[in-house]
Length: 417
Image 1 (cartoon, one colour):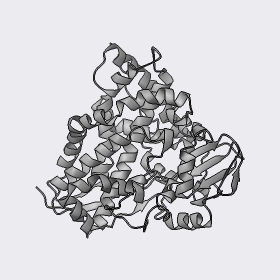
Image 2 (cartoon, helix red, strand yellow):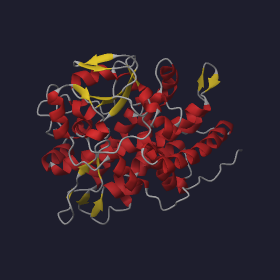
Image 3 (cartoon, rainbow, N blue to C red):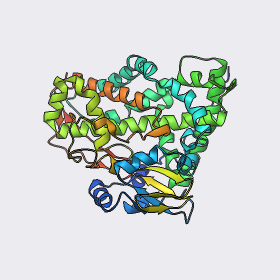
Image 4 (cartoon, helix red, strand yellow):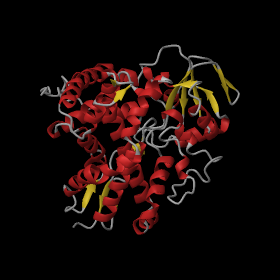
């Protein structure tokens, strides 16, 4: 049996990627009024979304490349459904630098060839079984740590940790290295503005996963690594660089999106106690409540594309080889699609029509898992934290960010059990 090497920490063990991440994603309290003004001017325009939001540019993007933004629901839908024009090559610069040969940066036919293999693992019928066996134990273990106190910071003590705990168990990673995996997974995404630490984390995860794949092929179990390590394309194993990239991206992407989505949902429910009570009494509203949170303030505000050819959008000419910022956050609040879009409403009839998981051939592979995780976490909170309310003695929550949105704290009180 191949012995796994010990996962290596960053040379600077005191480095805190979570603080650096805030700098990269921005601390914007509410980007939506600006997005609304821009959308009212036109459905598309020239401009770099990061610069428009007052952030530093992505240093992985090639210099002197034109940047454009797409803002309306109709035009965002067209762009995401037109991969032959709006290519995912844009992600070769940042995601490629972070994770390597990622399916997120591939176009057809290569993208479809590998995506089909990964997607089979995340079909709803498989994901549902993980709810009982993996998600619930992680959720309940975390809640047991604070449930007797009658108060908690639901971000720092719960939502930040539970999706990553789920991923560790799915991959059957060493439990004692969970915090280090989390740290390295977040650090590798910082390569777009902190190349030194991002590339160091990239290398250290990159040296670990080939050994893990080799071990699981020799001694397979029921974990995701074993399943995908033995998956074949045209009679051959998945290429190692594609597989390693997927695992590195999964640790961060699957955990991060769910953490942010759950945090936003909890925040909006606590700010609207009538809707929290409604959901507590009628759990059939849960799926739509999750979709409304994703629409109202989705975890990923902007998605990048690369123009494979000259194209005109809403009268704006975009030459080939341009970076296009497809602003899902602006589309998700477009009044042409959603009535009273700046209002959070768990009964909204078309809440699920959002773009927070993207759309088209690159729609999020892990979307079904994210919904299962959010459902199980919210169910446990409603069941186990009676009389849940904001803590009046602590600062109220503030959802922040221009690229990725989340509150950094959510102080609550409840009746202890």
